[in-house]
Each structure stands twice: as C-alpha cells, then as structure tokens.
Image (tube, rainbow, N blue to C red; front, side, top):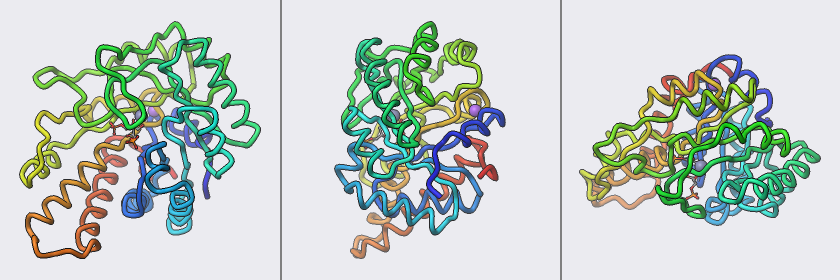
Length: 310
Ligand code: G3H
Ligand code: 13P
Ligand code: NA
Ligand code: ZN
C-alpha cells in the first residue's frame, strides 16, 4: 500500500539504518527502483519534485507509483520533494501523496516556521506527514539555486524551537551535502559535518533527520559518460562510508537522484556508442533500467542498511 513514513522512520531510527528516497520522473526509473526494493524486501520512499510534476504530469506519476505498489506489494511512501509553497503542498496532499516536503529554508527563520506550520496543519488534517528544512544546501536544482557561498549549515540551537513550533514530522539539515554531481571542489577531501548532526540529534532525541544531496556520484558512471561523448570533468559526490555512518545515526531518510541520472545517462550513451544503428527506445531503456535497479540494490544493501526491513 501507499503509506506515510511514520512507522518506517521509527523502525529506522531504532534499527540504526535509513530509508532511500529516490526521485522518479518516468516509468523506467520507477520500475528500476521498485524492482530492486522488491527483490530485497526494503521499505521505500519515491519522491517527486516540482520539476518532475511539470515534466511527467501529476496523474501519470501517481498512477506509475500505484502500479509499483500493485506489482511489488511493498509499503511505499509517495513524497513531494522540495515543495516550494503551501499551494504546491496542498495540491499533492489533495492529489494522493502521503508525505510532502515544504522547503522554506531560504526564507528567514520566522517565515520558515510560519509557512511550515501552515502546511503541517493542512497535511495532518489529511493524514499526510511533513518534512521541513533548516539551513541551506549548496548546489543547483531546477527550482532552487543556492550558491556555495550562500549555503549555510543548520544551526543546532534553532532546531528545537523550529520543530516544536511547526509540528513537522522530520527535518532536513545542511551538514555539507549539496545537490547535483559536483558536490566538492576537486582536490579537497569531502567531509560531512557530523559534529553538527550530533548536536542536532542531542537536542531532538528520537526525531528523524533527513539528508538531501546524498548521491555518491559513482566514478564508474562518470567514466562511462566521459568515455562515450559526455563531458563531466570533476564530478564528485559524498563518499559512501560517510552515508553509511549517517544512516547508522539519527538520519532516517537519504535522498538520491543524481546517481540515478548518471546510471541512466552513462548506460544509454554507451549503448548508442556501441550500437549506432539502433533506434528502438526499448533497446536502450532496458539496460538503463537494469543498471538503475543494480545501483539501488547496492544502495539498499551496502549503504542504507534497509534490506529485509519492509
Ligand atoms: O533536489 C533536487 C532533485 O534532484 C530534483 O531535481 O528539480 O531537477 O527534478 P529536479
Ligand atoms: P542528489 O543530487 O545528491 O542526488 O540529491 C537529491 C536530493 O536531495 C533530492 O531532494
Ligand atoms: Na538512521
Ligand atoms: Zn533535495
């Protein structure tokens, strides 16, 4: 069934693991992710951004995810990623999502509280849970663009007031991750701020924390892209051992999108390079879907630790 994340997060927090939240935009991505979760009996969050809704249309995405629930029999959370306003959140709540994120992290603290509280009120009235965000991630998204200089870590001294005044169900924090495939300056050593995570968790015992920007940018796929006509020099992500560590702590949801994009694009680029005569989309989408499935199986088993927890 489609479920909220409440029980999932409770079990993940106590069990010292995290749930993968994977972004979906089309059928092959939904299938690759959900087939992996089914094989491993893993709990799963599928998330949809504003850009995904604009690309694929709300109804198509809902129906694809409902199809995945039928095919896998798994409990799946359908989550709005980076909701930018009350209206976007309301439309997803009314339209069948079980979880929404209101991302007012770029607004002043008091305004973030005010918007988040309004979303929480409406969501909870409709049985839907809410993720909010404090602190700003660096990086570029369709709708959100925070430059590295403007990014700021979450301030642990603010989290208790924020959570108690908003009533949000989980909290995304900024500890050095960023969106996209270029997360750290080449030549520097990627290091998340686990000291901040620890300070936050101390102030919010038992409360589920969310990590955005958690792709590891597998170098095998960066190479596959660059070897087959692509140009992504210096693409680098979060080391998987740091994600594994975060999953063992209060982090209950780990967001991954870029890795799926890299797997899909690398696979298709290589297919085209090797088969310049082929033009049936099924022939190149099939290996792309298979590699997304392999990637997600790897994340579930070796990074998130949620295999067998559904
Ligand atoms: O956080 C951003 C996600 O990767 C979604 O990206 O806005 O391009 O769909 P998008
Ligand atoms: P990545 O770009 O690291 O995959 O992050 C995805 C994300 O945070 C979606 O909200
Ligand atoms: Na955890
Ligand atoms: Zn994000």
